[in-house]
Length: 106
Image (cartoon, rainbow, N blue to C red; front, side, top):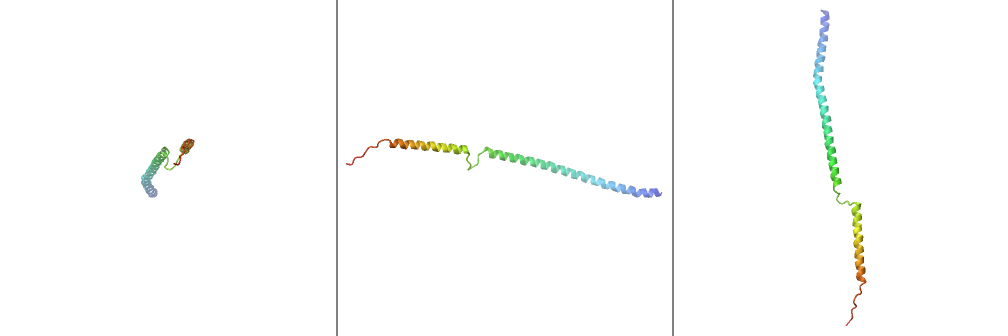
């Protein structure tokens, strides 16, 4: 009988520990699910952010920035100015080589 009296509290203690473990198990599962949701959501948001950043970069590359002129455009503009100046200079030279009629005072 003494053996039964000693084993009863041990059995009771084991049952209590088992009940605590069973209650902790759903909490542990909930925690794991929450952690997985966090990882999945974070990954999804990072992918969306990266996608938007790529789209913004592509848009910036596709259209020239206002107020910014490329070196090719500057060179072309400079070439046009030189051509215009040389054409204006030639027309001025040709008009000065034509003799002007003299006015006689009467």
